[in-house]
Length: 289
Ligand code: SAM
Image (tube, rainbow, N blue to C red):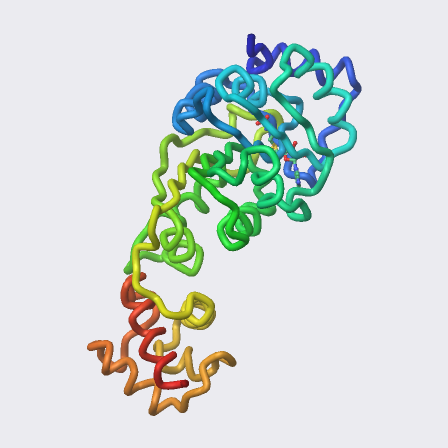
């Protein structure tokens, strides 16, 4: 039985172990059973699934995952939490806790060893200070992923989900949407956590595309172009790209590429869709050959 997700039980565990929250690890523990159930339900975890949990804390969500999944591996950086997890997860024989920094773990190797290289589900209440490197690391290192269902800062969830023409649209939106379909499944207020974060939170599910949604010859070049376009947001696309080290074309040549794309020379990067960035990077790539 999952029992930690109510405030009294979390407080009892914290007191028993004299646990002190570490701000540097982004520790905000969930204390709302409805939210915990919602996350596990949104992740669609079944007894066929291998689940990677990032940052189990005292094991609150881990208990729910163990009840629903075939196997859970939970990776926690804070050594002080390891004896607590041994206690709170003692009833489950389908969980492994690894005391490591998730950014240093070879997750593709883990998926191979524990799930035969088949797609895994990632479920987490993420430490907000490293949301983007964790998510981009999972996608870029070609870990076999079915879906990533995570609690993140509300503003970051919005950035992942939006399209062109909004202030939140940027390199993160395009990167996430290149690899996956994002859906915000719940908004979560600060009072669902202990201690309360200063920001609103949201649960977002990223379902990995079976095939990449755009035709792109050189993914690396496309992401360089995307980053260069948003680095200098207020500049036109042509100016932004003429300063990009990976684009070896003159400003005039870049303008010709933009014209070939069918867009005016005054256009800014923030107006382009993922399809257009892919097409532009193919045009630029061909020119540079
Ligand atoms: N899952 C728990 C819950 O929902 O109550 C805790 C979530 S808390 C927001 C984030 C957790 O990630 C903390 O337990 C923290 O110690 C852990 N963490 C922070 N940085 C980490 C890293 N680089 N690698 C692994 N775990 C990390």
